[in-house]
Length: 525
Image 1 (cartoon, helix red, strand yellow):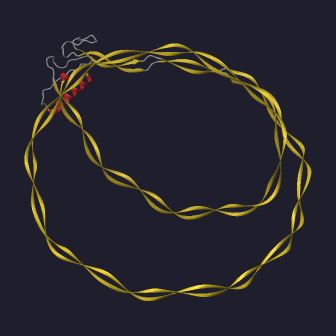
Image 2 (cartoon, rainbow, N blue to C red; image 1 turned 90 degrees about the horizontal axis):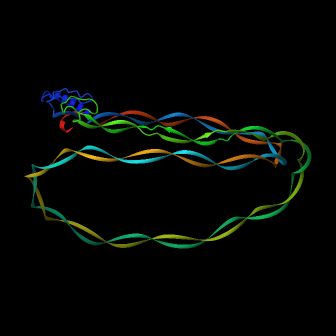
């Protein structure tokens, strides 16, 4: 409030300077912490003028430049690569695999898991909340509205419409229709059909088939199989057992509590202050100064909230060292006798009888009867009656009535009741209830069950079938398509984006501050 009085006093001085001495100079005092009086005690300013800046909106037209992008077609030469294929013959070695199975024994470590239930006790701080109801009193300015009806006289122009009946004479051409019967003679061509039997002779080729027995000699490759013993090296895995030390993490979780101070918040507190201009006494410092002029204002005070306790789970490490037995497999190369079957092809001549059917064509003459239909057109005269309609126009005079409306404006006086509403503010004291919630932490012990799983390894011997594959290479001739890259220049039409500046006028709302003098009463503050 004191800050607003200071602004009002400065605005009053500025208004006095602008008006050029229209009102006598008024002095105001600043009642802050020192409450120093500037004006004499008997002189008190009851009313002053405040200069405020009122925003005024006006429309201003500005020229704005926009960038417009247009597509422009351009022909460029683009290099395109075409893939052509060439045939190439080459020799490949095709592997022929033979698979045999061998028993192999090995040892695996099978894990055995055991689960044990345990309990862990910990203490938590449980918050207990209490709510207390309080009241806060404050004063508001309630607006009171009064409406007064006033009369406003004005003149309007009332239209008076007159209607007048009139006639319009005009002439029309009335059609008169007459129908007349006539005949039209014409000649048509009527068809006359005749049927005649004829013969058509033609020659066809008739097939004659003969069957003959023949022999065909051919050579086949007969496979001959030979078995020989061949040494084959193979690899086996021999188990080797070693013992090593391993560190296992057997830690556990425990709950730790941390106290966090409460945040600092700002609250509004009503503090009594003194105003010494009304009583005219010497100012006294402190809250127990001038008791007659005590006035409560709202001040912002920083208040720290109560601390809170946060619990969190923390892992406690407990490493344990134990011996771990490991079995690794070492590869060894051994030799064994493997029978290998080889196949060679021997040429053998064979005779196959077969039949050959030959066909020859013999000319044969045939006769086919058929009918031929002829058409002859004969002239014939016909008579067709028809009607002809003629139209003659006769002049006829007609009369059409119509209305003519004229409008004349007549002055008329009217009275309008206009409501005028005035507003005044009345001080009113209100009471606002509010709640204050306090928090208190109470220690509480809890039990949390958890499971611990331990793992131990047991040796287990297993047997598996190991496939042993032997490979021999067979030469084959194959052909493949080799890709060759060929470059070509091809004209391509592309769109190039060209930027162009376009100017247009835009309406912009511009706000300017205009000084306005407003009278203010000091006694109402």
